[in-house]
Length: 283
Image (tube, rainbow, N blue to C red):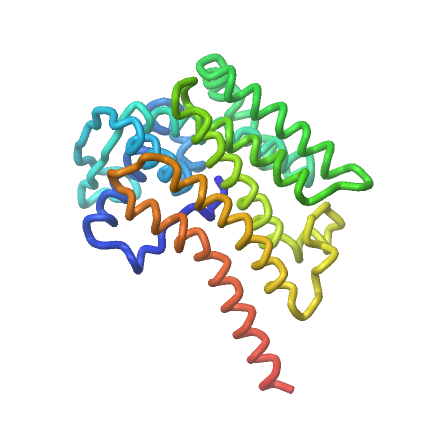
């Protein structure tokens, strides 16, 4: 749903890549099984990472199988699933539903309204199964909506409001690990909010939407200023991550946290530098 919490596949071993893909395919299958084919449009690696994290922490039994699908009809793919694959599928639907509501409210996209309507029944089922997570998600997103439309909206306050959303969905149980999982979810959500703000800044400035980085947009060192903020937030995130007693798949997850999560940032910056170089040569 965010699109940033992904691995740097160039640095994965073949075994790590196979495990990563199996978790992703397992999540895809769980979305179809629990919520129908339409829900698979919300499939993303962010929630595959959530599955890896919770599997590593709680060490549940996992089912392994090989299956074909519409995307891979010739060669059967390895699927690995656990109870947390199902949980991640449910949270995927919950966040996808709210994302479409937000897109409709902000930009009046007809497709977003239709998408929210198609997910409404599935979201209601998830809300009944996980009332705490969904209530926290709704309250935090409502608070974020208020902040972003206030005259004195603050970047840190907005990032924290979104962090509360990810804090809720990263803690599936009220147990000894809840506090640490919420702390990591909060830190990750704050980072993701600001990363998304950097990614969308040009579009938001053009449309007059709130963006916490809009004041710096257009400055020659805009990317460097944004990177300094993101670096500070990611240090908090990494510190919270390292407090979790994870063993299985730890190197794969560290790849995501320390390298993969910057992939889109670096790719977009590289494209920008190439455009600047081309413009300079054409003058």
